[in-house]
Picture 1 (cartoon, helix red, strand yellow):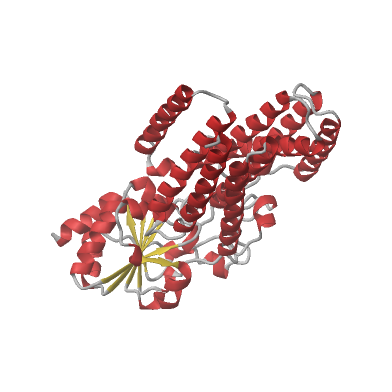
Picture 2 (picture 1 turned 45 degrees about the vertical axis):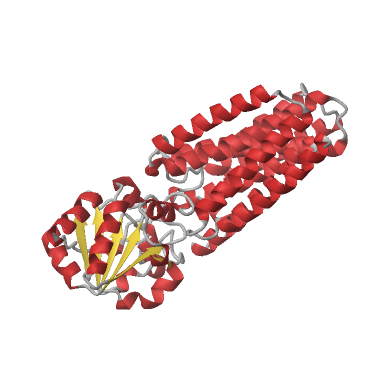
Length: 453
């Protein structure tokens, strides 16, 4: 069989696996299988692409697979769940950098037509923006740099100048597309700068949206690189990633009742801080918490990033099983932007083998939250903050939240009274029906479990 025909057939199989895999990722019950399908599709696509073009020998392909497998296995085993958002940010940046390099390498083939020059430029431009933007997102998520929105006077004017410079340099490059063109270097430098300038004014609470958007950018860059090298499967894969990332970004923006433009350009949380909160917190001991748990008939856990920090998902599941054995109805309410990346809480609970049917979306739990005896907030802050409903001066005003304050009793598990990642104080902590269970969430829940024993 002709090797080119075999490669095209392989691309069709890969595209089908990508589509089925992406469909399966829409449900927690099939997400793991979908990930495997997509990985298999990518393996087939990479091997077919390299062999069909005769770029490298089989020995190099096998060597690359071994090295990639080792890196992937180490990342999966050694990177903690708390660092998963940072790792995703680095993956997005790596995808952008790869597209940039593919586009740049295409220039060395010579004989570049105008359309190809434009696609190469897009791959370099979007890839560069994605790379530096992802590095800044990583730095904010890991708190290497200030996670708050960084704004300064004249910032939008500076950004406008950068954009204007990119447009002019790109036009000059397309007039004479060469690998060593000075206009290419100018475009690349400004693209890298734009990635930094685009992410620094975005506050920590919006990082899940940024991660999703940068993921989309990496897909669009890959699609442009696919046009540049005339590779169909790269076009398909990039289009799927780009489109799904945009759709997920839109869903998350709706979950915060904000537009994408507001997320990108508002400097969220940089100025407005909301009204000062007055009141007295009511601490509760593990022993007193046990008595309330023991008498409860309906308990809802609301996880946040603090659960990832404490690695408390396994003891949460154990407590849930004990409560069920005690005749209690147990559920887990998931906010679309809880944690620091899309689906962060779903991943944590899946790791602990929490039954999928017990995961409840925000829109489903809110209508029946008044019938919940105990809402257990584990490290969440912004997604349960009543200021989003009540305080028009709050930077999160208008954001849909899980209305845990309307439950009969609220247990908030926190180490301290510190505000969440967005820096917005939470009046929930001072509510009449709220009890603060201070300390490490894993130790606190383990203490409750021991009381049942």
